[in-house]
Image 1 (tube, rainbow over the protein chains, first blue to last red):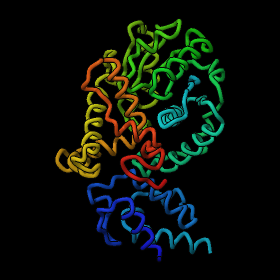
Image 2 (cartoon, rainbow over the protein chains, first blue to last red; image 1 turned 180 degrees about the horizontal axis):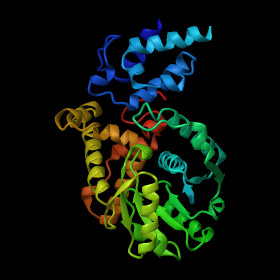
Image 3 (tube, each protein chain N blue to C red; image 1 turned 180 degrees about the vertical axis):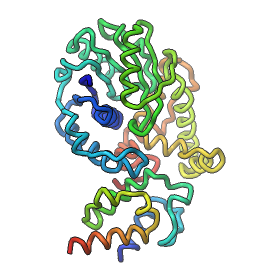
Image 4 (cartoon, rainbow over the protein chains, first blue to last red; image 1 turned 120 degrees about the vertical axis):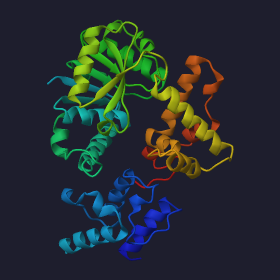
Amino acid sequence: MDTTARILSFITNRFPQAEITDTEDIFSLGYINSLFAMELVMFIEKEFTVTIPNDELRIDNFRTAKAMTELVDGLRSAVV
Amino acid sequence: MAVIGVVGAGVMGIGVAQNEATGGHDVVLVDTTEEVLADARAAIYRNCRLSRMMGGPTLDPDEVLSRITTAVGLEALAKTELVIENVTENWEVKREVHAELDRVLPADTVVVANTSAIPITRIASVGTHPERVVGVHFMNPVPAKPVVELIPGFHTTPETLQRTRELLSSMGKRWVDVKDASGFVSNRVLMLTINEAAYLVHEGVATAESVDEVFRGCFGHPMGPLETADLIGVDTILYSVEVLYEHYADSKYRPCPLLKQMTDAGLHGRKSGRGFYTYNA
């Protein structure tokens, strides 16, 4: 599974009613609040073995699967 | 700034300790084991790191933790000017802790009981200085919630209340004055709502998702009652409802059997990874 698919799978696993695309703002759906952003940070750091720098801990980086994928890809290329 | 003691390194104690430290106080956080305290430091570090993203101030986790000392046992609180107790919402546990606090604290140390339902006068009756005991009902997550209920017990002195108000101001809190009655205002209403929501799931009338959707979609609440239960802790909800039931001896507070089963099964909500919903943290 690629990065986007793994992120989408994590979200739909937690919110089975979510039918989302990779560019959909998950926080605009009405039933996902900012507390879930904390879980996303924990998930991404564990799943992709990256540490998200404090400057990147902004809600805008976690609104869409696409934004999260770009964040992860950026961090991985920085490591390599 | 005064040295503040915080008893209990659970969800509430962690939030209170962090909030005190960011308010400029030196904090002594105590619990019963080193493992719990190590987890607490890790949780405070994580919460500080994520503070800005969650709509709070930008915090330096290392700086905040540098103001927090952790220790096993209440003896470490002997030099504190004010202690905030946040142990489990269970009368036997609260009673033991307050009896011990009465033994180890200087007579002029203010004792704040952070409780969601137990009457303050009852807590104060355990020790020999009921005049220095006062109730504050903090909301969760503590650093993010600007308002608390402030509850004097029967014997609480104006000086105790004044020192508590000063502390709350230093934490950036406002307070609502409420008289001493089990559940105060907030939980007299909220716990019954959550308990009844649990009954709807227990009876198969609606799923947890449906119950919460009614509250969000129809009433415009940011969170439904069962999401709120998972955030507070399902075990804490049960204990609070039991306190109301015992105190008022009124069957309208009878705890839902589903809450008991979930508590026994370890489904305590967000903090245990599973409650009415499943979490991955």
